[in-house]
Length: 390
Ligand SMILES: [Zn+2]
Ligand SMILES: [Zn+2]
Figure 1: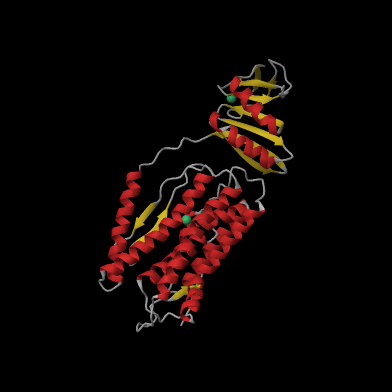
Figure 2: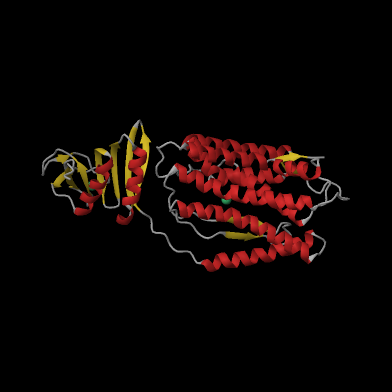
């Protein structure tokens, strides 16, 4: 079928080497005074022919969008477009542009739909050796931690280490599966060992996302999949641990319990208490709920932050990040027995100074199903919040 392309001309700067392609009714030889974006020199129409790669890209865009304006160079094509179904149009482009090596980026600006095609960044393959070595080191450091935590018992150390790592692996696999599902490039998990004197043996694990996240839906899935999977494992392991646990002679071994932990105590022991025998499974479950809580704070690029960015949008997510960072620092000052709040708040303010880049399609709203998923993630966050106990 014959798609009618808008008239596009090649422009060249008369002063510097700058050149681009634009939609224009000007004839060859005419100029735009001061039009060069690089040196403010004059832009002159140099030719009426456009190269094949541009014809192809414009053809693909024109199949789904009406093109209102365009400025193109080899590595960046900027368009002003309109579409009655931008969500489907964007997904189509995302798919077909892959083999041309381009990514579409869609934003709404002053009520106008902006579409940029940018070069797909090259993804360097990481070396799995680092991931394997860090995992092995974390197995050792959690075994050592468990050995000291549980009165020099090898069995307890093994139970603590294996249950803790199982929950962390579940969390990271959740992320990994949704990355595969959404065709987002990501590394294997990096486990972070914490040798003595750190009491827990690990600071958790992270995977690095190496290519842009295509849609808000994918952003919610990427953020929610890890914590929800890890949380389900933590509930099962904590439940088993509490079922095996008797009353404690120790005085208040835990400063607080997460809400879900308290609910599981109600089911298994009939009351919420810190006076119970802390065995390796209950302790590793407690640790993972605590890590999940910190991960789900809806700020910056934490797991909860990705979800908040998709739900709230760029500016509100940014304001929330600032606000919660200061609130955590304030809580740390108000409760000096929990200095981690101060540290975490400060880290948030330092690490997440900039805006979250958001999804490539930052325009189409979330589907109902993904709003439910975001709500489920919020529920996990609330269930991991600390509940003070006597
Ligand atoms: Zn110039
Ligand atoms: Zn995570």
